[in-house]
Image 1 (cartoon, rainbow, N blue to C red):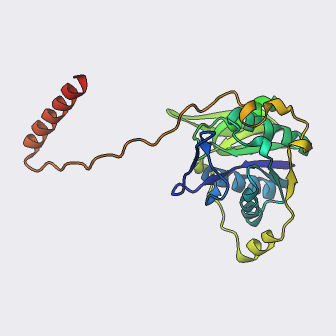
Image 2: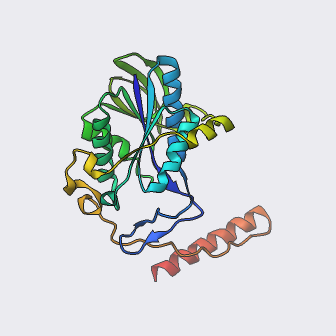
Image 3: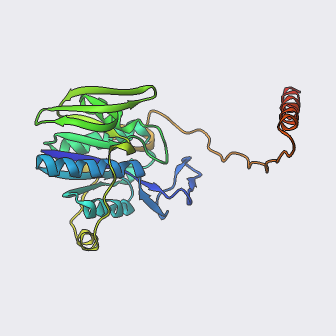
Length: 264
């Protein structure tokens, strides 16, 4: 079986920069990490290979520096890694991103299961996984917390809902997005890390994919960011001291005053 994991390198949350021209996140030269939710997808793919046999391929779309994320995936146990990098992809929204990844997966050819983290830490849209399923015309199971059964042509998975869980059955190939409850990602050994440094990473550009250039990057995106800004800094809070009933009365008065002020 061939398990494909789509991973994303995201900016470290302490080092966020915005491109003033495109209003998108600036990734070149920014300290980055593997999207945390994608770590669970990598781990699950490796566990499935250990159980079912086959191979795991990690696929990432991003700037050249994203190769470090792929090497980390190899250190964890991934067999193959492909970096999709081209200036033509810059500024892609979730639709254009999922389209590009789908075309890369088609180029891979044979695949049994596609795994993604439930969402990216920098965008929080949770749209790329379902977008992949749409572009590839595949069934999908989102927010998976447990794979109950998998065969060569069938998967049964338990997905999280706000009010409980749901067990779904789907035919393979299929797209899964996973949540952190599914497993605990392994830590690679020093030997695996050293081996990953020398591993071969396949590089694909736009010209290597049989895709429509009009659907790539910022110009091919269906959505545009018109404006981006940081929220105003919060003022320091206030500590109320006294008996419980005194604190409640004081708090109610402050809320009333705030409502009246806001209405003026």
